[in-house]
Length: 112
Length: 115
Image 1: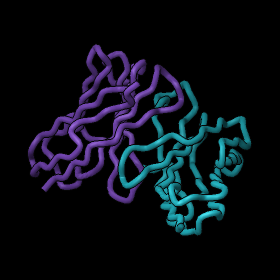
Image 2 (image 1 turned 90 degrees about the vertical axis):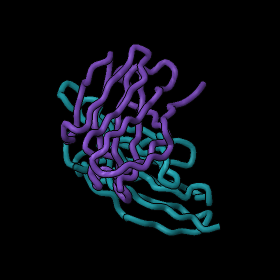
Image 3 (image 1 turned 180 degrees about the horizontal axis):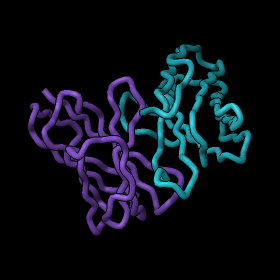
Image 4 (image 1 turned 45 degrees about the horizontal axis):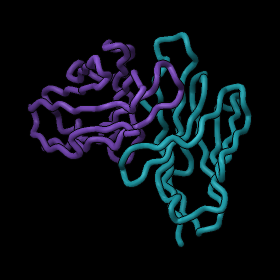
C-alpha cells in the first residue's frame, strides 16, 4: 500500500515565476492538506481540500492556490514567487475527518 | 503562526538514556499529536492524546497532557541512535469551528542520540 507521494522532490525557480506541486494521497484517503515548512521551523498549514473543495485555509496570500481532482490527488500552485517562498512543502492525507494525518516526503522549493 | 513552543530547542543524550521534550500551546484543543521528522523530510505520526486523557503509552513513548497548563511532554525511554530526529507537537482544535482539521505545529525539538 503506497503512502502519500509528492512530486517533484526538488525544484528551483526564480522570483516572479509560478510553480505547481503535486500530491497523491494514501489509498483510501479523500482529504488532502498542504503545509509550508521553512528551515528550522515547524510546518504551517496552508489549506485543506475535501470533495474537490477548499475546506479550510491558513494565513497565506491568494498567490497560494490549490486544486483537488476526482481521484483525490491534489496540486498546490504558487504564483509570483518570492524569495521567502523557499521552503519544504508537505502534503498530508487523511480519511474524511480522521484526526491523524499521514505526510508525504515533501517537495523542497528553492526560489533564487 | 505557531501554536506554541517546544522546550528544549535541542537535546543531546547518550544511547540508553531517556529523552524528555515539552510542548506548550495556547488555545483549547481536541487532541495533541507528536510527530518525528528525519533530515528535513516527511513527518511520521508517533502518538495522539485526546483532551480528556492525561497519559498515553506506545512502545518506548510516553505522552502526558495537562490541559489546565496547556502543556504536554513526550518521553522516549532507552533511546537509540536511530531516534535522532526533530520532534514536533501539533494540536488539533475543538471540532465545530472553521479550524477543524487544521494541525498547528510547534517549532520542534532537535534530538541527537550519540552511540
